[in-house]
Length: 88
Image (cartoon, rainbow, N blue to C red; front, side, top):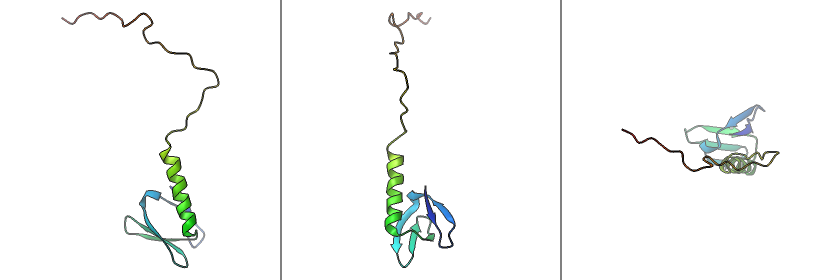
């Protein structure tokens, strides 16, 4: 989702995956996959940069938070696999 500005100054949140084209008329016109067109204040280059930044954030995967202390190795069965009773 990217934040853009309508011509009247109100902020608008747009799903970046729904933008088909961005047209540079005197104002920027976005054509969406559902057939709607939106006019926004941001120039086309800024819209493209916002979409690219959004894609970089979403495609890199979850953030990794490193622990403050080193992790100890986890050994699930230190003496081997536990004995199982045979099924009757």
